[in-house]
Length: 166
Image (cartoon, rainbow, N blue to C red; front, side):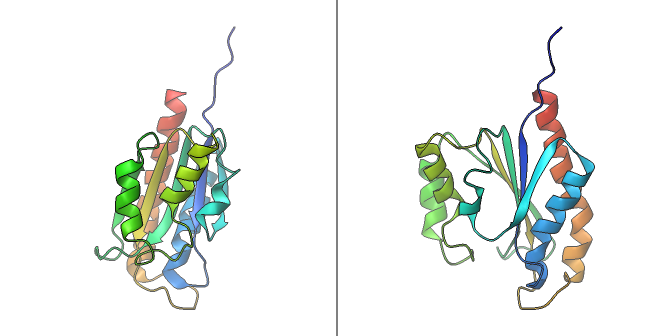
């Protein structure tokens, strides 16, 4: 009889609940992991470097964060990052560094570092929720709060898909 393999899934919530919509990443990640106990929650995180060590040996890492891309508030974006081929993506992402991220070292740069030391996850997916307010204070704006259930379901679906392929 063979043991069933469970995929190692890490769900990372970025942001601060004290910066309004910035807290949505952690909220979504926590709720998704509560629904699927086969995953591991990491957060709240404020810097992609915090993922080093947490994602070692992971089959899937899901990063959930508020974004400011110019899309309508509450829009969900799911971006799969090609872990094996970072060259073009890294150039595109680094050219805009600092304009749309509050993080010191971007996710792609941390992924490149992890690959260099053989600690990168097999798969990386970013689930972004377009935010509206990032000023000091608590509570999500209405459109961001309305997007939370769909974002949670999107993360849960990714986790379940990873488990079914393990």
